[in-house]
Amino acid sequence: MSMVDVDKLQFGLETFGDIVSAEDGELLTAGQSIRQIVKEGQLADKLGVDVFGVGEHHRPDYSVSSPEIVLGSIASVTEHIKLATAVTVLSSDDPVRVYERFATLEGLSEGRAQVMLGRGSFTESFPLFGYDLTDYDDLFNEKLEMYSQLIKEKPITWHGKFTQSLKDQDVYPKTDYNGIETYIGIGGSPESIIRTARYGYKVILAIIGGQADRFVPYLNLYKKAAEKYNMPVQPVAVHSHGFIADDEDEAVEVAWKNIKANFDRIGLTRGWAPMSREQFDGETKVGSFYVGNPEHVAQRMARTINLMNLGRFDLVYGAGNQTAAQRERMIELYGTKVIPRVKEILSEEG
Amino acid sequence: MTKIKNVGILGAGKVGIVLAQLALKAGYHVRISGSGSVEKIAMTIETLVPGATPATNQGVVAKSDLIILAIPLSRYKNIKSKLLKGKLVIDAMNYWWETDGIREEVLDPSSTSSEQVQKYFNKSTVVKTFNHMGYHNLQEEAKPAGAENRKALFVTGDSKEAVDEVAEFVDTMGFDTVVHYDIADGIMTEPGSELFGASLTKADLQNVIDHFDETDFGKKIKAEEQG
Image (cartoon, rainbow over all chains, first blue to last red; front, side):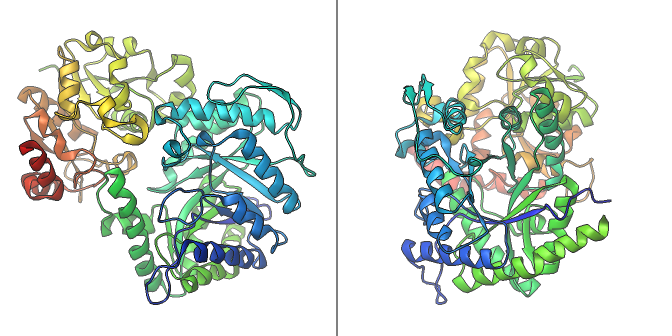
């Protein structure tokens, strides 16, 4: 029986800002790709999607390095959708600036700003902003602590090692709403789970390879840690890649071409072998790629949501170089067919 | 040859935890240590690997017949060489620039990572394996001997006896093996090679290993050697 509260369940879409392809296969510019994202955010809002997330990357294959600016633009043409980063690489950012940007977005969007903080799975931002990767853990720990002080929106006194020291200084603008909603993006490190529970932030698990089932024990760890630190157990979110098209075979072929291209390009710099068809098929059948026609994707999402008793599921779209038409159709199908069908499946099970 | 009963894992991150889960399932006594105190990893181990014992590095090593190094490569020298004296050691580590930083600061460019690990732990017998398959593939692909489409791991080290013993251990953990008796051949599965991140059957793995010199990575390594 499903324990999921279908009425409270949230559905998100996230993009990393991959460069969009024209119908003839030529790549659009970064500027054109950014404007396409704004259009897509507007579409997602119109269709009733709950959250729209934009990633931060500092690479030629992605158009967005400053997600809050893109989100600010989306804020002005949308009404209900929450506006999130996916993720903000806190380790190489300035917590004061992070606060300021999100407080600004909070004002612009009338309380719809949401920050997902992460250590980042890409590392270009470290040398770019003058940080040393060997301080990866220490940077995140210190900046998360500083951020936690800042979002209290009171003057702070702070002694920093990697960050600036402050003496009774205040940060602006103040927010009008309930403060900035904060998630921590987690890739599977037990330490990150415990740290998030200790702060009382919400968890969003990035399940980008393999079966969701292996994360179930991590949810127990999150609950135990929250209890230990006397913090609330918040609904957990998951983020995974996907592609939806009207036709199953078309969806699989478009996703295979694009996700493979994306994965292999990243693999070149990291040293992992190209994606095999066996690996891809495993991911789409039982793993973490939600690919197919709306019914197939809905069934697989419902299974994961039920298995993990999730409060939110975000589908990452646009991997590789998809056309604007493919991206927009996917968003339409997600909003009009997949979300209602997932709710229906989960209600039947309940 | 001592029969392995007690497996010790240094490193309680993603790889260490998956290997602990597999070892426990295979019926071994498992002890595991993290970078901090025992208390710091106790809740993680109790929840993710119930049945394994969290311990200090010393506690893990003292009671184990086999030690698995599953820490970031840049930190292996944090473990004192003499701590592992006389032990059979599996090197499951790789150079990974995202966690290890600049390669030249971690490794001498003139040899492979496992040669350097063996050289540092000079009173131990080092065998390289478990390094080339992704941690979630290790978890999901482990299967009993003889199972259909069972995947294989490359096992290599300078001591034939140790390699064969580790190969037997790998088999109990759920994988076929392809063995070599030269620690320097660990290069064949390092990041950048055709095998890094790949999950292959024994026949396919054997095929890539046998034709390593013809792969793009193999050609590159050869060219560098001839410098």
